[in-house]
Image (cartoon, rainbow over all chains, first blue to last red; front, side, top):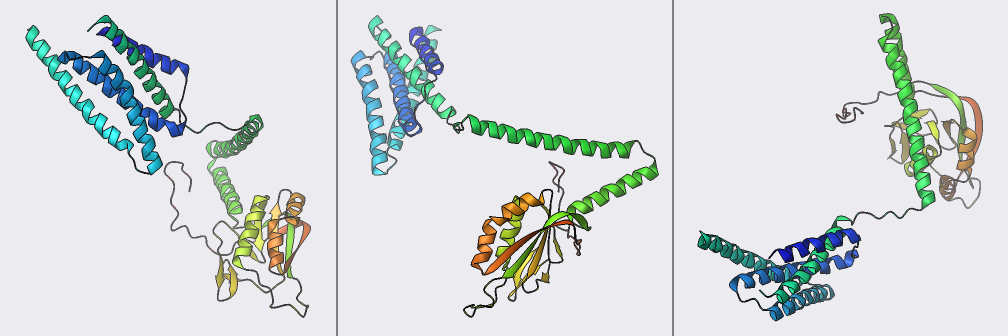
Amino acid sequence: MWLPAIFLIIGISLGLLTDFTVPDQYSQYLSIAVLAALDTLFGGIRAHLDQTFDQKIFLSGFFFNIGLAVLLAFLGVKLGIDLYLAAVFAFGVRLFQNIAIIRRHLFQKRKSKK
Amino acid sequence: MSLKSKIIVSILCIFIGFMIAIQFQTTSSSKQRETRDLWEVRAQLQEEQQQQQLLYQQLDKLEVVLEEYQDQSEQEQVAALQNSIQELKKKAGLVEKTSDGVKITIDGIFIDSPYAQEYPTVSPELLNRLLNELNTYGAKDIAIENERIVTTSPIRYVNGETYVNNHALPDLPIEVYVLSDNPQRLMDYMEVSQSKDDFSIENMSMQFTLIEEMTLPAYQERINFDLVEVNEETGEE
């Protein structure tokens, strides 16, 4: 379980070290992609705790979610509607749900250990 | 979880971390970009240095005054105080002032022409523009006819006449007296100024004459300080 956390830290430090920035007009897309990625990550952790983790679903979900979110944001910009809010809402709700379930799992684990 | 899926999750974690870091950098570094070139930066630096010099000079002056206050007998202190008051009055335009300057004579053109529509008059807007321009080009003190211009001098349009300091301006020609540290330069600037064009459009001409030792009248009225408050932060009014 520690391996992903370490890699996450490596990724963050890599990003901070490269001094790489995204043009202002694309930062919205990146933020929505980050949200989608986080959602997938927490979904994966939850699936792992539920013992229903499927590597294919995880991997495809990661890219599909990011792609869909960015596409929605792009479409929203083209149509003049803040469609990215739909993605933000969906991912936000799912993030909270997943985290809540993960929390419950962790409590149960602790209880069963005692 | 198998090792393979662990590795996949880890690699995705690197991605996510990278994206978060970039997003973080993008949002935190969206300050205004530095687009000035070397010369502009140099000019800015020089400006700031001049400003610093000016502030140092002012500080020196004030320190001298402070010393005078501190180590003198009571009588001398009163004298120093009087001196300061006189100095401030001079700055505010409440006393007469004599120095080198430029006399600007504003006169009508085409007055004798049979096609002249009406006798030209100086509008408050024109005068305001003229004063702004004079101040830009280094005027120290200005008087329009006999009216000394101070910080609060009103220039208004009342009943078809232009009022300066609540007194009506006479008909053309009008004389504007300007004191400056460098009258020649001021005159050169004014010869090619926008105001000259503006006055020409209104059928008025401007003549500039250098005058040595010109005396400006004092501001006659009381300056109203009712609404003036001391700024607590800077100590300035």
